Each structure stands twice: as C-alpha cells, then as structure tokens.
Image (cartoon, rainbow over all chains, first blue to last red; front, top):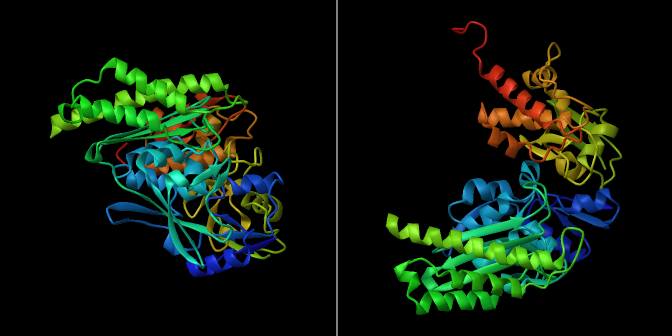
Length: 292
Length: 162
C-alpha cells in the first residue's frame, strides 16, 4: 500500500487521475474501519488532510460553500445559524471524537443510505462540487446518490465542497437510534420550509437503498400552505394536513428489515418523525412572525 | 514508511510503519505507549482517545501517516513525574475505575471537557463523554469523578484566599 499526502488540490487531482482506485481519506471515520478490519486494502491511500483549500467555508453566491475538509464539529460550532438543518444532523453524528474528524464530504463519498448528513442536504437542496483534472462540475444533491454506497462521481473525481443556501425558513431534523449517541440511524428525516419560493424540502435516511426525498409529501404540503394562505397567515396547521404529510413521507420510503429495525417499524417511525418535524418547524415559522 | 510526530511533547521517529496502520497501533506497538487502549477499532468505544493537534480523537481512526508532523497527546502525558493529574486522582478517589479498560480514554476526554467548560453541567458531561463506553457500566462514579476533578481544579491554588 502506498500513502500519498498531497499539499495542493492540483496534486491531489493528478494523483486520483493516475490512480482511480486510490481511496481518499480525510477524517478516516469510515476508511480506517475498513482498514482495521481488513475489508479495505487499497493500493493507494490518498490523504487529503494537508490541503489548505479544503479546510474552510465561505459564503459564495449567497450559498455557504463548505470545504470538503470541514469537520462536523465546525459545522456545529460555526454554522449552526446559517445551516441549521445540517448542524442539527451533525449533532446526532457519532461522538465528540468522531465529530472532530468526520466531514460532510466524507458522508457523501461513502454515500451510505444511513449517512446522517444526507436528509438535511436533500431537504435544503444542496449541490456537491466535484473536481478532476478534467475540470469541476456541480452535482445537484438529487442526482448524487445512485445506489447503496454508490454516488455519481467518476473514478478520477474528488469532492471539493458542498454548497448549501442558507434557508429562508425553519429547518428540522429527526433521527431514531437505539441510544442518543454513537448510533447508526434506524431512520432519519430532514425537513426544510422555503417560504421565499413557497416550497418544502424533505430528506429520508436509512429507509431506502439511497437517501431520498419524499416529493409527493413536499408537493402536498406546499399546495396546502399555498391554497389555504398559510404561508402568510401563519395560522395553526390543520391536524389532517400534518397527518397526511406524515403518511406521504412514509409512503416515499422503501426500507428493508435488518439488524437495526424492521421495514414496518421504519415506515411507522418516518410518519411520526415527519409529523413531529413539521410541527416543530411550523411552530418556528409562526414564532418568527411574532418576533418580526 | 518513516513517521515523525511529537508525542507528549517529545519528537518521536519510527520506521517501517505500514501505510494502512492506525495511530493507535503506532502508539501501542511501536512507541511503547500502551495507555491508549485498543478495543473496538471502529471509533465506537473511545478507549483510544488521544489529542491530535489539541482535539480529542479516536486514535484507531487516524491513519499513521496523517499524524506526520502533528502534536499527539496521550494519557501517559497527563501526569507530572511526581503526581497524578487531578483528573486521574479524582477517578481514583471517586471509585470511577473498575476494570480500567475505558479509563485512559475517559481521562483524556474528561481532561478536554474540563479544559473547555471548567465546571461542566451534568448534561455537558454526558454529551462530552458519550463516545466513551464503560463496559462495567460504572457511569455514576465516572460522573462523580468529573464533578470532583472540576471542583478541585477550580479551587484557588496555594496562596489563594481559602
């Protein structure tokens, strides 16, 4: 096994182009588990932690551009106000030790259906910036997940950054696991209300081959909020609307039975989490007007 | 490959490091520092918690080469030659050590917690130590030890008013 430690992004991209099978490593929270247990024996380990360009986040074109090397701990401490949904998801990840190392980009590279950042990224409508020696492209998050632990990247590409537009409305995140810390989710749900474009964003985790949205639930809720004038009146949401939203979120899932939970449980849990997340988010939306 | 890093303030060089091995393996098997424990090797248990450039991390999830040129702090670096660190003493005095396997990781995590929070609330302690599992389930004594260490470290030193 070789170990390469490029200090510039150009060097990293050249190395990945020359060795498409190289395994990139940043926080190591996925890659090292594979190495420690003998499941992963890449010819080349490509350490990205020396590349200064990846370490920071900036605001660019009204979006937060989160460098691939920014840890979950920093998303929580530095971006809780700008990216509340992603920060909430980050707080549920692993332990302090894991959050000090792990990155959102690593979550995307692994592309596990259980990755905790995915529902928040889907709900917010993020874009993944990937690069190779051939150039840079931006992949909408909806097109990023292509299968179980598979994503839309080519062999010579690396993740540069994730761009997320700070929300115009409330965001919420809910995760179910067997305990509060250090768990792989049994099911997770992310919600974003977008009053500026009168739209709703959702993300479902651990309940389908890939993280996915619940488009019918989004359209239903946006339609209800629109036709009843609720975006403006900020009146209480009808119980039936909340319940129907939960049903439609659950209907978008396609879970399996596994050691963490049954498919039936996951579907039920999603309907509950969707109702709760909507209740919390709508309360936030209503209190925002009282402050204004 | 050769690895050079600073461990507990001393520069260390080790040769013939396999590229796929962890910082934990390097510390325990190549540097003679077995304080950091090897339990789960997947970041679940916190027994191998060390400081890497001042942040607590699981040493089992750091590739050896990623520590090149970095500052590593292990449980062996907490005590003075003459006396245990107050966090260590508090764990002994509070009866927070049972089989002892989780203790080194908890000591480093607690050391970091008190450095950041002074006197942490119980909720802050539970959150900060959530990644350190005690298989003996002696968590109440561990919480006692954290409170005791925080209280002792917050007290004025000799020459103070009380």
